[in-house]
Amino acid sequence: MKKLIFGLSLLMVVSLFSCSDDDDPILQSDLNLVLNPPAKLKAPTFKSGTVTVTNVNSGEEITKDLYAFMLPTLNLEDGLYNFTVEAEVDYFTRDVDDKIIFATTGIRGFSENVEVTGGAFDLTIDLFEYRTNTSFVISEIFFSGTKTPEGKQYNDDKYFEIYNNTDKILYADGLCIAESELNTAMSLNKYTPDIRPESTPVSSIYRIPGDGDDYPVEPGKSIIVCDVAIDHSAENANSFDLSIADFEWFDGADIDVDVPEVPNMEKMVSTSASVWGLHNRGFTSYVLFKMDGVTPEKFNTDYAYHYQYTFVWGDFVKDMEFDAWQVPNELIIDAVECSTPSNYEWKALDPSLDLTWTHAGDGDDARYGKCVKRKVSHKEGERVVLLDTNNSAFDFIPTADPTPGVIEEE
Image 1: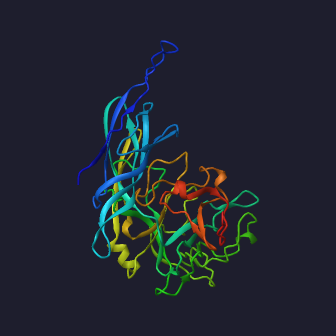
Image 2: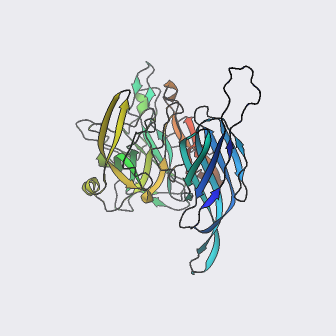
Image 3: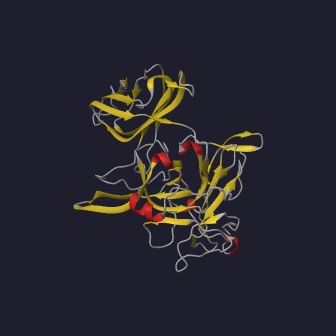
């Protein structure tokens, strides 16, 4: 497959006249951007698309349309950039009758923290195919916790809401929720092996029980899984009622609170020796998947993941090694990357799972009592369809008011 090569000339604006002799000139850079289409697509041709260049330091974005494999000239200052490509392409494939047909699909590409400096510069971005999810989606994540009227942190009211975004009955039996091992606010130096393109490193996994047809979820309905399934507003006026929850994760009677009326999720694995507490600033990310027929013991051994990186702090350098687990990306039904505007450093999830990320607050007190909430796309009759483009900055409302058990129509 030949590469689709787009020449992107990023010309740094050079000031011809200075306000004073002490002004530093802005350097020029010529950047050649090489886009590799997904290998499985046959003879892809662009229909439409955009390239977005984001200045990491200032947050300024420039988005330009792609036309017939041509990019306009972009004038940028010297600096650190993220590049995002989103497009539609036509390609040849075969239908159910094995006839060759022309089809259209979406493709994306992403490269972050690229330092564009003076002189010639080459950048290659591998594009991947993406499709809208037609299954369960994570509609809300409440990871920040609340504060009591006295100003104390309250952490027992964290939850996920999972929504049936289809027009048919789905079964929650066997659904797994996993938290990422990698932290979006701490990029790892010389991190290896980097398995993110194929699998997601995870630190904790909890699974909904059932034999396959025990827990039906109607179209346009949701389930709630939480830490402690009680009416938290009775203890904390700033919290809410989670006695409506369908499942709770439970880490053992010696360290956790169990509500007997609400079924417990099955604890698959966890690197924590205590109760699973979602990162309350939102530095970890979450994936939803199924892995039928795999016991916790088998997962623990067959999907073990050992990695290392080099920790550097001033003159102090130390090689670090850790153990976690990995979930094959092909099994992941939905993924939500989380971070904060002030602390984001890198992606814990592969861009094919989630192109960007969302947040609740900015690591400050504004996060308390707030969640990340998926937007409404449209309605089909009385059924709400939630937005799902695998791009959380677009799909989610950041720092939203939580509404457990209620899917708002707008």
